[in-house]
Amino acid sequence: MASTATRPIVPPADLESFQAHLNRSTRILALLGAGLSASSGLPTFRGAGGLWRTHDAVQLATPSAFSRDPGLVWQFYSYRRHMALQAKPNPAHYALAELAKRKEGFMTLSQNVDGLSPRAGHPASTLKLLHGSLFDVKCSDFFCSYSETANYTDPIVPALQIPTDESDPTTTSALQARELDISDSNVLLPELAIRDLPRCPNCKKGLLRPGVVWFGEMLPTAVLNDIDRWITESNTIDLIIVIGTSARVYPAAGYVDLARSKGARVAVVNVDRDDEPASGMYQGDWFFEGDAAQIVPEILKSVIGEITEMPDAAEER
Ligand code: BV8
Ligand code: ZN
Image (tube, rainbow, N blue to C red; front, side, top):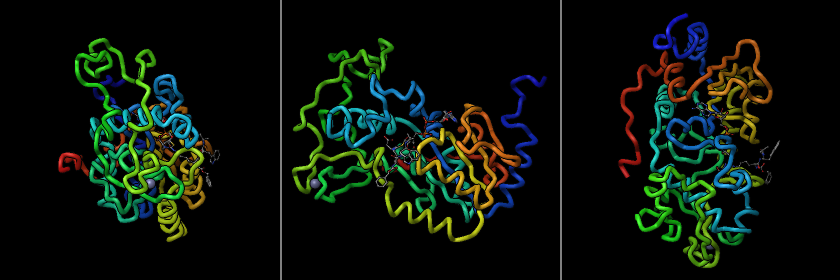
């Protein structure tokens, strides 16, 4: 048994057959999930049992949660904005960006709202953000269409400051000193007054809300149309690469079967061998078990070569 040091990241046989198919593929889809950014230090939805503090993350990502307690929902999103801004794209983000630059017919569908793929230089024309971005905001008032993109202000309003000075026991460093995590339920979150939350500068009435797609909300029409146009452009899709997703949220997860129905072979990259797409795995598919940050650059190497540079667009801001 080869020692761990020399054990190849992916089984050679799989790598060879996958790369042979990748090299000859002209129509490729990728579906990305939170596991892609796990190695960048961002918690997945299912990681930590899908909980942020004592709250079910999926429950917080709903219009009803926002109308019930906008302060709590904003603290959830402000925390995720802060974490995403602190994080850095990892080699998998760069490998996918490089594939997009080198493979004409490569379209990437991301469920991630963390902004790391754009920061890795993934061309926007072939990167579809299905669920929006943490760094877009829009007015929550039904009659106001105000929206803003690329708002990286952290915190977006002073009241959402994740405490930083020593006097406050909930400071990030004080917490780290006590090995507590701000997302830990033992740390009481301040009750925020509505007046301290981000207000719409246009109608001055509505609260601003994160520019993400909440459960029960439609995905952005322009994004869905762009994807449909790409899918119907040709009768075939050769390959879909499913990376770091439990593929349980729709309509995103539905693209795996849609691609399969157009002849695509499926390649899954996931640390959890049981996390297959709902429709299962078939003869000719690949399951690469392990960390996306390690595996994705390896399996795409035949097209993209070695990932050397990792420029971070955030540094140019
Ligand atoms: C809608 C933005 C209707 C916000 C998100 C059909 C069947 C059943 C249900 C439905 C259906 N159609 C619609 C629904 C309802 C619902 C849904 O799908 N519910 C689920 C829970 C069953 N869908 C909706 O509500 C959608 N809207 O349907 O509107 C409509 C129609 C007409 C008119 C009006 C309305 C909207 C869905 C989008 C919700 N927003 N995000 C935010 O982020 O806060 S979804 C959010 O959760 C993410 O974007 C992502 O999509 C999902 C989390 O999934 P993953 O990213 O996969 O993360 P997860 O933690 O689950 O898994 C991580 C994986 O990575 C694991 O497999 C793990 O093993 C792996 N991993 C971990 N570390 C690594 C790794 N892999 C590799 N390397 C590592 N290092
Ligand atoms: Zn407004």
